[in-house]
Image (cartoon, rainbow, N blue to C red; front, top):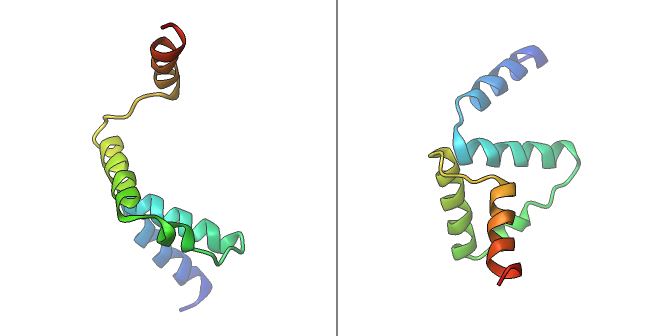
Length: 82
């Protein structure tokens, strides 16, 4: 494959990814481009941590996310205004 064909093939593969798989591929690609070969951060997480991250990404994909502003406002109301 020549460089143009490789780029097109890579684009098509990335374009077919959704949700957590797209985010993971993006992170891996950025790490590689930025010269980081250390992918152990994910590997060092516990099963529970990985599961919680995956659950959060699924919830975001399902439209169940909340804005940072709303979360901070709720926390301030809960803990500062007691």
